[in-house]
Image (cartoon, rainbow, N blue to C red; front, side, top):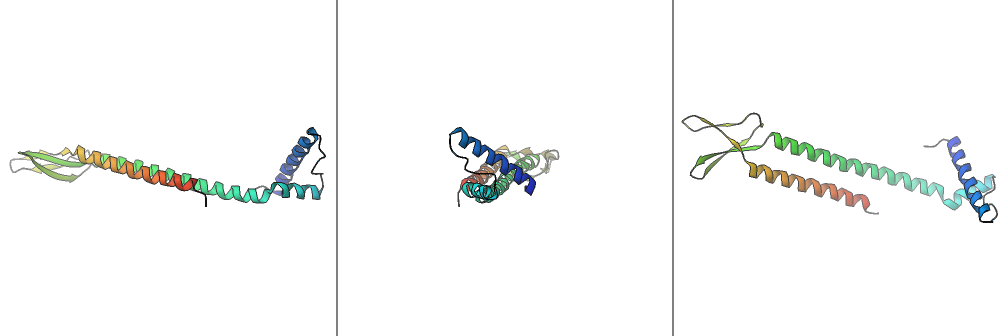
Amino acid sequence: MMDKNQRFKVTNFLIERANRMAREEGKIEPYPPTKEGVDRFYKDIKFDEKLKKHKSKKKQLRLIKSAQGAVLFLLAIVLVVMFLNPPFEIHLGKGIIRDLGYSEIWEVPMYNSGQGYIAGGINVTLLGLQFIVSIITGGLVYFSLEHFKNKQY
């Protein structure tokens, strides 16, 4: 927020510029350096209305940008967690596939087959499907916020 001194300097600068442009065009200075001239200047440019509109729009855009950033950040976290905790399965032969659930990638789950323990493998198909669904969902949320940002109310 500008204090009175800064506003006064900006006002004087803008009035001098408007008067200089009027002189260059051969016109009479529209804003004399008096209180009436300053009031007319602000009335003509509708400064207060533009300032309020600009502040509210800027605040809204910052909120939406941060919301979009949050969506991307959360999507990245979800993808990393999915990669670090993939679904495991084991192929027992004759078309028999046993689901071993989810586990950390560094702690492979073991299956007790009765003859010993067998290490499970990552179910790449399911992991890929989870990645695709997560990316599509995150993209839809991100672009819906983009659409919301551009909508005029």
